[in-house]
Amino acid sequence: QVQLVESGGGLVQVGGSLRLSCEASGRTVATYNMGWFRQAPGHEREFVAATSWTGEGTYYGDSVKGRFTISRDNAKNTVFLQMNSLKPEDAAIYYCAAAAARTYYNRRYAYAAEYDHWGQGTQVTVSS
Image (tube, rainbow, N blue to C red; front, side, top):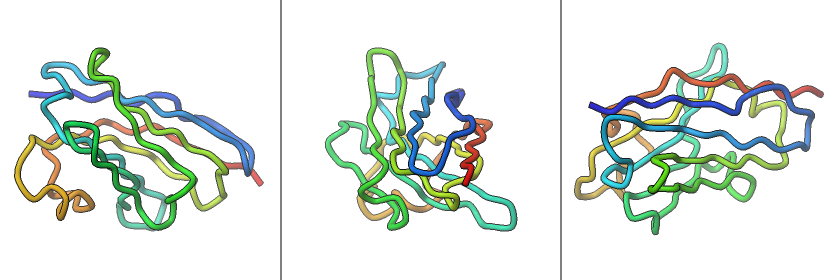
């Protein structure tokens, strides 16, 4: 079992930055592919970013590419999401997720069904 706890959410102005953290327990994140998703009211869960278990492969949703960066610190069992140039449409609850390493992750990273474990989410609010 893997438990994930997100933190770092809060209120930020348009154009500002936040760094979200996802701390895992029960199993080292080094053995998992990790992803970030978000969900705003009235919207479906949206893929944000993902990284392979080696940390060498990173992927981003079109809406955040160039503004967000995913990274991981395996020694601390933590995954991060650095969010820059925030826009009002970035406001959502952000969830981190873990997927046991498997083949073809490079083709499945954006699908929520790929992930086995989910955190409770952290709220990000962007003020205009």
